[in-house]
Image (tube, rainbow, N blue to C red; front, side, top):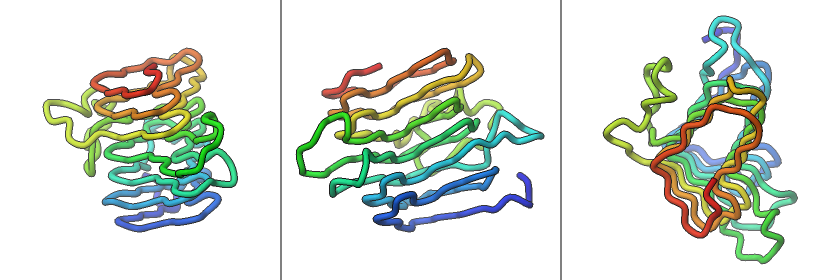
Length: 204
C-alpha cells in the first residue's frame, strides 16, 4: 500500500441522496464494511482507473457487508458500484436492492455492479475479505461460503465489459432476484461463475 495514497474508511456509516457517494481517483483507497448503507444515491461508489506500479493485479480497496438501496426514483439509472480499469477489487456480503415502488422502464432500474476493463471478485466473503490475494480469486468461497451478495429488482445485477482475457471476473454464492439480467458479460475475459441462485432473472 502506498502511504501517499489517500484512504477513506467507512464502518457502519450511511451516505444518502448523493450523486456520487464515494469516488476514488488516482489510487485513492476505499474500504467500506460492517453494515454500511448507501441510500438513494445515483452512484454509490465509483473507483476510477488505477494500476499499482508494484502490484498491478491487486487493489487495496474493498466493499464488504454493505447495502446499496433505492426507495425513490433517482435522477438517472442508478449504479451501486462502478469500476473502471482497476484490478483486484473484492466485494462480498453486499445487497443491491431497488425497492422503488414506482413503475418505470425496466432498463432504467439500475445496475448493482458495473465494471469496465476491470478485475474483480464478487463472492462470499461476508464481512471478511481475502487475506492472501494470491489465492483470493479462486478460493474465496472455500468450504464455508458465508454471506454472498444479493441483487434485487435491477436491470442488471452485474454488468461486466472486459478489455482482454487478462480481466478476471469471479462471482460465487450470490442471489439474483427479479433482475432483467443477472450477470451480463461482454468481450473476452476469464470468468469463474458458480454457486449462484437466479430467480426471475436471465442468468448469464
